[in-house]
Length: 355
Ligand code: HEM
Ligand SMILES: *[C@@H]1O[C@H](CO)[C@@H](O)[C@H](O)[C@H]1NC(C)=O
Ligand SMILES: *[C@@H]1O[C@H](CO)[C@@H](O)[C@H](O)[C@H]1NC(C)=O
Ligand SMILES: *[C@@H]1O[C@H](CO)[C@@H](O)[C@H](O)[C@H]1NC(C)=O
Ligand SMILES: *[C@@H]1O[C@H](CO)[C@@H](O)[C@H](O)[C@H]1NC(C)=O
Ligand SMILES: *[C@@H]1O[C@H](CO)[C@@H](O)[C@H](O)[C@H]1NC(C)=O
Ligand SMILES: *[C@@H]1O[C@H](CO)[C@@H](O)[C@H](O)[C@H]1NC(C)=O
Ligand SMILES: *[C@@H]1O[C@H](CO)[C@@H](O)[C@H](O)[C@H]1NC(C)=O
Ligand SMILES: *[C@@H]1O[C@H](CO)[C@@H](O)[C@H](O)[C@H]1NC(C)=O
Image (cartoon, rainbow, N blue to C red; front, side, top):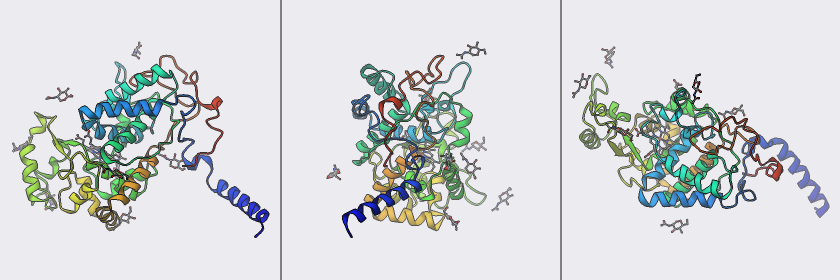
């Protein structure tokens, strides 16, 4: 083929590909390196804040990953989970699935403070959270990925929205698949992302349903290892949640602080913690993914970071939508959301996202 014919063939293919994947479908307008001109140190400053905090308390990695998940599942990844309640509004963070279990807010505050000092009113809290989750994954799991950015911050945060959108640890497989499908995530994404339970802790109240009065015929969930149930009952005596709501249990008893595939290894050894974890074994399609990740940790890691990027695209605000919050805990006063740099005049939206 002549090079001219080759070029025109390539051009035709390019047009066809662009027609098939309009901008909205390839990352909702988010872009890797979004702040490279407007705030080049943004991602480094977030990384430094996360690393400093992680050194004192490795648990913040789990906290930040979960914060990003709980942000994205409730009104999209718009930083709404970071907003504090006010006299007139009970915010997402104070809903039962979030309070008192969410952690890592002070790390986002520290990163935001460092960034505002360098480049005020440019970097959204939603993006800081997405970067912080990525940095947490790198610290706990030695795996990294590029985070498309350009999210804007939302101005609405309500506890009811959190209750309506966060999946319950009592869920069955079909409920979980349904809950993730509502966010345009696949059944495989659900299995892949559940692997985040390879780090972090849980309160007793999230799993005592499997230990006490499980069914008419059995106190303990028979699918749980009886030795494991014995251990859990020691840490979480019946009805103790009421008096000791802050008692926690590592979610991965093999390597509690390492982001690896041991979550899946535990699952197939009857050491899963929640009903929703155990549920991944109850459907042959989901179980096949579990088995794949037991056998091949690198495959899980590469799928995990891809699913994290996908999760980070849920219903994002871009362009002139929303605002760039000045304090991640407080909606800007009297803001229309339009007065801060939206990136539109800095050429940020002239390129088509490629991720
Ligand atoms: C599949 C549905 C999911 C359910 C039902 C679920 C439920 C839970 C529950 C109940 C806890 C413990 C909270 C407590 O009692 O202290 C927890 C912790 C955690 N979850 Fe999930 N989760 C799900 C998916 C995810 C996803 C998609 C991610 C992130 C990608 C994630 C990351 C985490 C992390 C890292 C922790 C530990 C947090 C910490 O130590 O501070 N979870 N999850
Ligand atoms: C709460 O609502 C009252 C009455 O509607 C209003 O006067 C007050 O400014 C509101 N406070 C906040 C913090 O929004
Ligand atoms: C981290 O990952 C890199 C590249 O995949 C690898 O070469 C290195 O040995 C890993 N380090 C640790 C501590 O696992
Ligand atoms: C999850 O799915 C179940 C079953 O479809 C549904 O009852 C529940 O409301 C859903 N929860 C969320 C948070 O979407
Ligand atoms: C899922 O995709 C549909 C079709 O592209 C879109 O209309 C909807 O807003 C998306 N939902 C979420 C939660 O991203
Ligand atoms: C369990 O008990 C309830 C209420 O007593 C009864 O309706 C149900 O049929 C029982 N289930 C089984 C599996 O025996
Ligand atoms: C826990 O509380 C329930 C209901 O209040 C009660 O029926 C049960 O006996 C209590 N269990 C223990 C071990 O105290
Ligand atoms: C549990 O932790 C929360 C948040 O740190 C705290 O406000 C509460 O007092 C603690 N509850 C108990 C009973 O220790
Ligand atoms: C298992 O889950 C997959 C993915 O959601 C679904 O398509 C399939 O119907 C489920 N299989 C069974 C037996 O429930």
